[in-house]
Length: 177
Image (cartoon, rainbow, N blue to C red):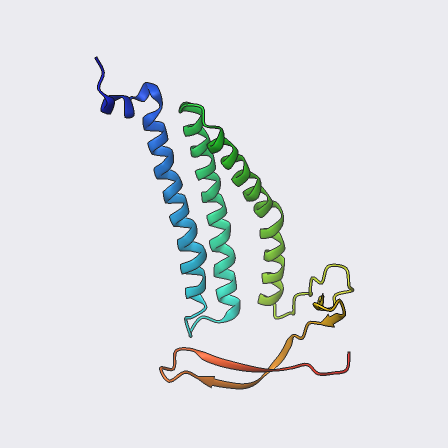
């Protein structure tokens, strides 16, 4: 007679594959959170790191992370294939694979072009979505079109007391448009 504990981890039942899948997904989520919400913002806090260098580091970081995500996707697919049928896991993996493919084929190349322009000292184009490169307009609650104001040059720069970061105050471009 087989005990309940042995059933839970019996390799024939796919328990090991499911546990490995769960561990891999947790590792993936941890990597994603670490790269996106810790490492990326932290590099912009380093006072000695110039904007072009920080953007180039970010570009390389996300390119490497995208490759690592594809390794996670392939290993997860193998674990799902050898484990018991799991429609939710399969659907989730397909959705993540589609998002990663969009990121790799569209988003990262688009951002690479913008970063390359900034590194070369240029100003990337405003992607206004069909209004001739102008900043987007929004509809107010009353339905009237209002123009989104973009800051131009800093009108005042002040350092925080600890000297580690700067505060910028912008004056909006108030030319009659």
